Each structure stands twice: as structure tokens, then as C-alpha cells.
Amino acid sequence: PHRHLCPAPLEGDPFYGGRPLADSVAMSLWRGARLVCGLRAHGRAWLPVSGGCRRCSSAKEQPETGPPEFFDVVISGGGMVGTAMACTLAYDENLSEKKILLLEAGNQKADGKLPELHSNRVSALTPGSAAFLSRFGAWDHICNMRCKPFKRMQVWDECSDAMITFDKADLLEDMGFIVENDVILSALSKQLTAAADRVHVLYRNKVINYTWPEPYPSSDTNPWVQIELADGRKLQTTLLIGADGPNSMARDSAGIQTVHWKYDQSAIVATLRLAEPTDNNVAWQRFLVTGPIAMLPLSDHLSSLVWSTSHQHASDLLSMDEETFVDAINSAFWSNENHSEFIDTASSMLRTAFMFLMPSGTSVRQLPPSVAQVEPKSRAMFPLGLGHATKYVGPRVALIGDAAHRVHPLAGQGVNLGFGDVASLSQHLSEAAFNGRDLGSTKHLNAFETERQRHNLPVMAAIDLLKRLYSTKSTPVVLLRSFGLQVTNAFAPIKEQIMAFVSR
Image (cartoon, rainbow, N blue to C red; front, side):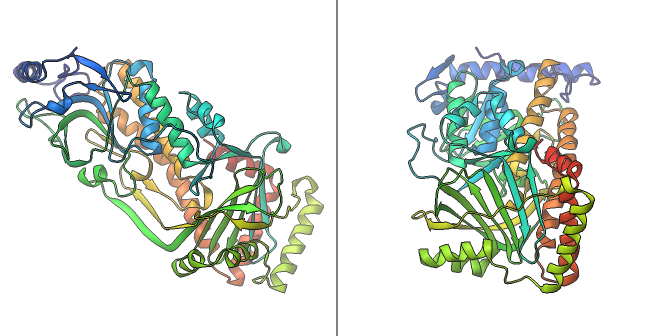
């Protein structure tokens, strides 16, 4: 039952191959001593315990001087991305013999009845993310709770009539799905509970220190990542996965630098009730000079608001009475206050030219629904920024989700990028386990980093460019972006390439 406590060196391990025989023998003796100590310290087999969490029955009794508990993989952070990582590894047959631990500082997410009121924090999941969640059964739970597909997206400019629409197969296919973050996490938690015999979970326990192995460890040094918890417990692992958000302790402790800046903007989120029920299958976004405003469908009569604007304006919106706040939303979607006659004339001429040259490439403009009221206590505000880790991996560590990258919400790509990280990393770890390699080897970790940076960096650069491009009323810039938007809208192959890339 303790076969995983001190595993033999594998290919990729610093002690495997190319080392003097004496070093290998010394390492074997060192691990053998650790195994004996572990058996004496624990004195018990691994057994299921109550609470849906499989872990060592004597874990709470581990003395401070006892040997650290060993795991093949430790995931730090139990948000949507971290929990998805735990689920993916738990349901992978190639990793069935590996000991996996999820660490979460917060409380266990309740699997109780779905709240009647919609949450104000939502994600726009791509078909690619839905397919990923389907691989281990989480998507079925989401569909059985609350999920609103949308078939079209319309984006337009505050300073001109330029617009672009995205849809699939003449509205016969779903473009994406608006899902509350709480629903996603609840679905993932259900699948994690169902895999209680394959993954260990520790809630309400905070990491206070990481100790990293030497770059070139010798036979008398510990080759694993050492983890110290707030309750005094100590762990060690071949691979630490940092999924602990934009202020990642795992990233900072590993010495991985980040490039980041603040946008001098905050986002206002709220749940909106429409003036009248509709099919509500369109996601609306308008680029205002102060920042983009989006209205995403939740049901036939409810939508979710994400309004990015200056800190002061966001604070004002948060403190407004309901009637004034609703008027401000409707005005933001409908007002032509920042139009100019010159730009409107130029845009109209360009649009007419495209209609003549490419009649099938133009889109019909739809009008967004009117908002009647805001749901009580649904308004909230949070600051916006961009961040990107210079590296996603290091010696025995990999970063995923917001620990590796943070983006502006204007394209709704945050959690989709995170799920893409999980899908990529889990695939590389599965292949490593199948081939009997060390899970913490930089060989496959570097392959994961290359694969994800090639996808994430272009998306992040495009989002940042759009944010800056639409933050001015300068006539030349407005003309340039209006021309670009209408050209892109007229050429279906370009739009299809954009949708295919962000949906991966």
C-alpha cells in the first residue's frame, strides 16, 4: 500500500541514467531509508474516509518530525481551472496508479440545490471548452443545471455604424455557451467527488512555504518539491501545478517573473432583466470610448452585464439607484452621441461598396433588447489588467490558468485559455506516464509551454490591441478601425478563421 511513498527513479529523473553507479546505489539506499521511516511513522494503509475525500487515514496525526507525505502530482488552487486539472488527471487511465492531490485554501463547494438567483459572474465557454468538459462528464452536469447557448455575436462601434457579426451555419449551430462560474465549479466538484478513490483533496488548508530541489541534486539531497501547510503538515511531490490565480504563490516562489500592467479600468457586472422575453440567443458587445460593454444571455428574460470602464465611472455606476443604472445601460447600447457626420458618411459609402461587390458578405444589423431592471444585489466591481508569466514551467513546476496569464474580459477568453492549458498539460502528462517517464521532467513540460504560448500569446496580443484601438475618438483611428471591422465582416473566410482559432 505504500508503493508510491518513495518511487524508484524513472527516465528524466536526475538520478536515472548517465550517473555513476555509486550515486544510484546511494539514492536507492536513501529512498529505502525513507520508506522504512514512512512505514513506521504511518503504520496504516490508505483507506477511504468520510467526506468524499480519499487520503491517508493517519494524515492528521502526522508528527512534524515525520517524513513528508508523497504525491506524484500536487495541484495548488481549487478554482475552475485547478479543479478541472484534478478531474482530468483523475479520469485518465494512464495516471490511475499515480497519487494526485488538490489543495484548496477555501471551503468545499456545496453540491446542494442550484440557487434560484443567477450569479453575476459568468463565463462564455467556447465549443472547444464544452468538448473538453465532456471528456470527463462535467458538461452533462452543467447542462442539467443552468446553461444558455448563443447562436450569434454582434459587435459594433460607439463612434460609427461599423459592425461585425459571428455565427455558424446560418444560426443552426451554437457559437458558445454562457454559464455561471458557480455552475461550472459545482459540476467539476461533482465529478471530483465521484473520483474520490483516484484523487485526494484537502480543503481549508493554505500553503505557507515551498522548497525547491537543487537544479543538479546529488545523492544526498531531496529531488522533490517540498510543501509546508499552515497546519504543520508537510508534503513532497514530483510535480507541482500552480493554478492559484493571478497572485500565484507557486509562481512567485519558483522565481518565475511576469509581465503585467493595469488597464486603469474596472468591470461592472450585474444580472439584468429584459423588458420582454425573447429567444435571447445573441451575445451583444459595443465598444465604447471608455471601454466595452457586453450583454450575455442567461435565459429568455435574463442577461448578464459586463461593463468595462474607468474606475471613477465604475464607482458611480455601482452607487447609482436602479432606475438611473438601467437608463445608463440602455443609453450605452443605443446612444449615437459620439457619432460624427463625416465618419457616418464614410462608413456608409464603404458599406454600400461592399454590398455591391459582395452581397453575400454583409450582415443584417439587429437591435439589442431593452433592459427593464437589474436584479437585486447583483452589481459588483473588480479591477482589470493584463499579466503573462515569462515562463509557464520550471524545475518540477507548471503554471496554468490565471497563474500563467490574465486577460481583459472583452473577448471572454479567460477561462477558455485556462481550460486549454489543462487539456494540453494533461495530455503531455498522460503520455509521460504511459511511457514510464518522470512526470516532473522538463522535456514534456517544455513541450506543454511551447504549445500553449503559441496559442495564448496571439490571443492576448489581439485582445490588448482591441482594447487600445477602441479607447479613442480620434477621427483617423475611428476611420481605420471602422474600415477594418467592415472588411473583416465582409470576408467570411477571415471570420471563420478567427472563430476556429479562439474556439480551440
